[in-house]
Length: 156
Image 1 (cartoon, helix red, strand yellow):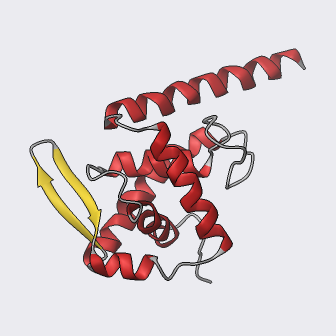
Image 2 (cartoon, rainbow, N blue to C red):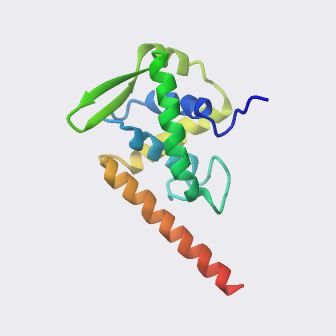
């Protein structure tokens, strides 16, 4: 049986939706993973009223896996010509290609609309932030979440 959820393929579809926003042109793999994660868990980042993938006590532990899925999904997109890679002095940046844009614009479901909206909020939240600042914000929220859960556990 072919898995669909939490796969590089699922991640690649979200990456296309994310990149089509064109709000930034300096997307690294880690930035894409960070914006994607914030879009999925917008409520946890105080950028929206919802967590698109639901409320989950262990969501921040997912981030490392999501970075790997993003790398694998990006390789899939680059090989198929949906995303262009540009080398810079600081590493690689990724931009959606015209083929990728054409494909992503066909993704017109409730989920894709909700995800696009969440991406816009996440991009506004991270506006002008570097890769390191984005990762630091996620790490800070992860630590705060763990401390909150540990405190709740000890109260029981």
